[in-house]
Length: 272
Image (cartoon, rainbow, N blue to C red; front, side):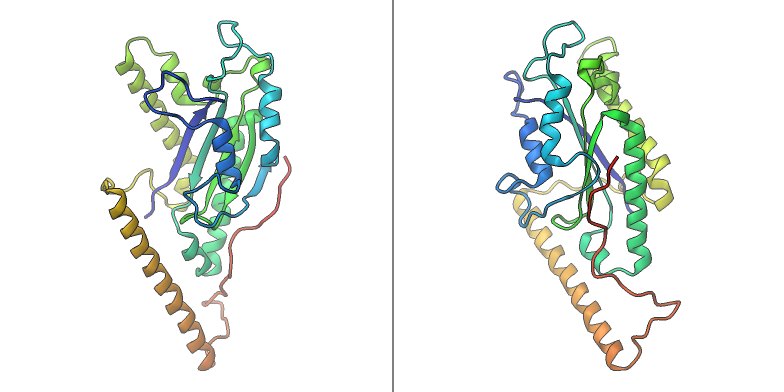
């Protein structure tokens, strides 16, 4: 049984000067999502994502300007350049891209059903603040959806209206400990909501059965390379098996042996 993954972050135009460590900016996260050449070094062979919902990725910055131009914060002050005005998140499917390419049709159709259910959940959760959902289905280990939401600041909406952790932290009295605890509890509730509405139907769990071991970067790279090699061997064995079945005349599909798909997902834009 595989674990679900959904994560939210908020971004500002510039990293706050008082931040203990440098934070990603809006420009950087938009470049990462859009796979702008030279701006996503963690992806060896970037592919242009497919926009499944909303605005093209190259228009998100203009939408951000339109929703924040002249807007003020909760105290009536002009929004600062380090104000968090973009919510970006990712939800990932717990089956690798290589495994899906080699999978029987029902497994691919299950991924497409998960993708559709995730898009519906995001639209319901973020409403008209949701700007775009983009699918990355082949340039990283697992297929995943990036989603971008921008509150209508000029109409009085705030980030806390759409980020449950921020809302809980802002509305909790006390010191840092109490606020951090409220943030974590709210985000845990969000995980439960996503599981109830999406993941449970696909038998995904809310977390891994065992906690992840923390590896040093070099060890992690070695393990990742080893796993990639094993996955390649599985794919080669599958191809060899298919050739053997063809050679022996047993390759004709039956109701019990569904045909296989070379790819997965459906490219193209879907309007609102």
